[in-house]
Length: 171
Image 1 (tube, rainbow, N blue to C red):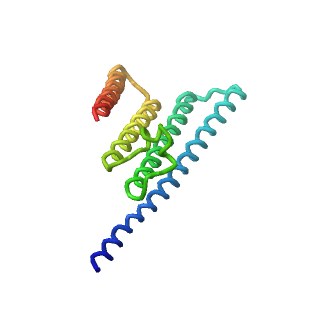
Image 2 (cartoon, rainbow, N blue to C red):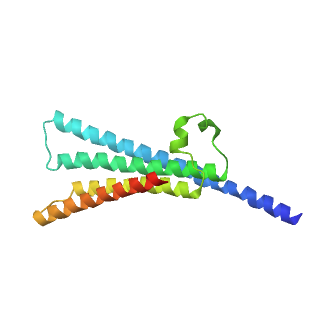
Image 3 (cartoon, rainbow, N blue to C red):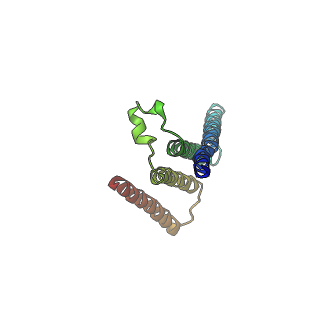
């Protein structure tokens, strides 16, 4: 009897995951809002620059940096959504509303912690790649050797993405 009560309590404790699901979704919404405001502000800066016939020193770098920064935030928001969906499906219940949708099986269907980890890690790699390109856009190069390092770093990132795509297709 005591064993049954303990097991019931233990099983019910999985509902604590709801906190991570809810706050993960709140975090995703916050990131989407912040990224959208960043895109809006960047667009406003572009419009203002062209209307006033101005051309600040690092205008193009600032525009690209603003957009890439927003993409970075959107991708992290996607990580939070995948995390929330995955935890819910693993610990609580399948999401019935998603069962009739063909895309669900490809994007948000998570049946193990390994699948959740794989999906999140792929998006995190993309966040890192986007962050890399954002930093590269604001870097000043003072010679051929630095440009060579830049080319090698781009090649390394592309090679890493290629390897990850090949590994992902074998599963």
